[in-house]
Length: 126
Image (cartoon, rainbow, N blue to C red):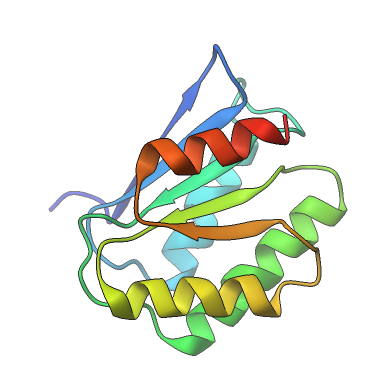
């Protein structure tokens, strides 16, 4: 059985893509994010795309709250840049908008339906 998440860091620009193959538990997600942040190609400006295009059901609200707290803590500590969430279904879009609203850091999380637009938004902060 493949892992629920994989990631790749584009060494030519400060962007990482975390691809969801299925909805992970929060522990699986946070473990993947920690490995990403400790990768040799990671840097403090690294923007992250959470690519949920292959997962068609939204995460639960408690998962989103934990995710936002994790991202806020890493960004406030200077370990991470912005985070873009790319979705295809309306429920996941709504949960992504919730993440945008509950973050403590202005303009740090945004939800998109298009991968290219998400990457462009991340690169405007780089």
